[in-house]
Image (cartoon, rainbow, N blue to C red; front, side):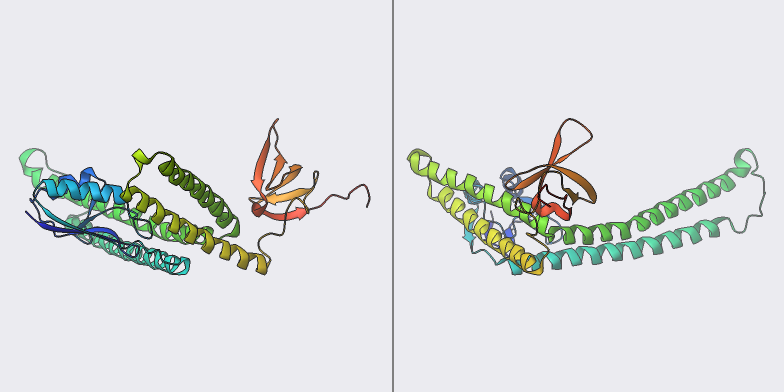
Length: 307
């Protein structure tokens, strides 16, 4: 049996140390949401960095491992990191992935070139138009041609895979930039605040139904709440910076009126109704589309009756 340590920090996420191949811990860990990470040769929980520890799953896994005869230690540090640190760490991981993709592209290009040259080398001694003899006399010739063609196909496949990598890297850059756009940040804040309200209701439910309360679950909820508050405060700070720069908060119910034209997602749309937090715009059909004011990037105000 193994001496196993399950740790959780916001920097590294949830990881497992001390397991050995064939010790029986793997199937138990997988039952409770742990997965094997080949890059670091450890079990862990995916996407657990900068999130509250899944204490219920961790404690359940620890209990099952102990029942199987293992010695288990659980160490949890649920101190959330500030948004600036989290964003910097995410950017660093994305840069590492892009660098790995670029290296993979170079490797595939070199592989494609080598395979193409090898394909040509297989048949370069055969004169063009050389017929293939029938039967056993031409078997070696046929085998050589087949290997040459298969090698050329592999070369083309490697080249095609390499051609798609720059687009993947560019897409990663666009996705990262999009996550920092004020309209996207505003929608993220709204989503996180909704999650916070749901979590608060669950925490109230624990008090109303003591039979469902447990120290582990309560600690998990408290840690999740601390993370949500930190993320919301960090994103709101980004919005305030955008507001000061004039890229957010320019449009509201006070500045947009029915009949105006607004630019949303690259298109000019006519305002059907200005709501408190969103604007309804006309479509070619009987319904309207609704967008948050943060998504408006341009305004063509129509003259009012008083103008």
